[in-house]
Image (cartoon, rainbow, N blue to C red; front, side, top):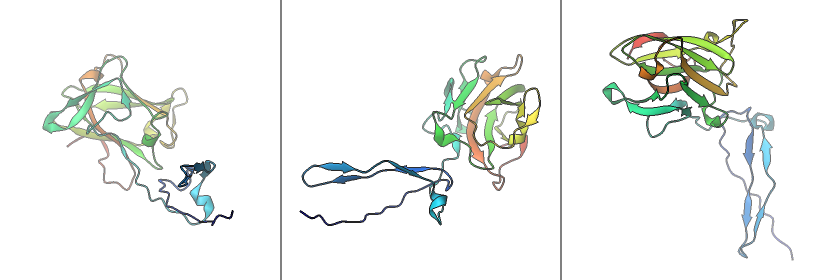
Length: 206
C-alpha cells in the first residue's frame, strides 16, 4: 500500500525572533488513528529571514478583567472609575512572579510604568530579584504616573545600577520604614520602551 505524501505548512506567530518557538502536529486519519510528530523547538532568526508578528501584551496589570501577575492584592476601583489594586497586607506588600507568568516578562529596552493614587506621601521599595529602587509616592487627589528605567534599580552593597529589565523573574513592592503601602491604589502596570510617549519621572498628574 502506498500513501501519497502531502507537505503541509502553517504560520507560527512569534513575539521575538531570537526566542524559541515550540510546536508539533497531529495527523488525523479517517480510521480515527492519530499520528503525532515529534515536539520541535527552533529560534526563528536562525532559519533565515524572520519577523516578529505576534503582538505581545504590555500590561502587567490593567485592572480590567483580572489581577494579572500580582499576588497579595485586592482589586478596587479608584477615582474616575479607574480599576486598580491595593496591597492586602502592609508588611508583605505585593509580588509579581514572572516565573509562573512568562507572558509578563519585560521586552528589550523596556521601562516599568504604572499609575498610582494616594492622598498621603509614602516611600516604597521596589525590588526586582536582588535589585532595589526607592520610589517616592507623592500625595495628590488625582492619579499620577511614574516610569522607572532599569538604572533606578541598584544592587545592595555595590550600588551597581541594573543595565536592563530583561530577565527579571520577580517584582515586589513593599513599604519603606513606617510607610503605609496599603493606602496606595496602583493601576495600569505595563512595560514601555523609550520611543513610547510615556511621562518621565514621578508625580506627574493624570
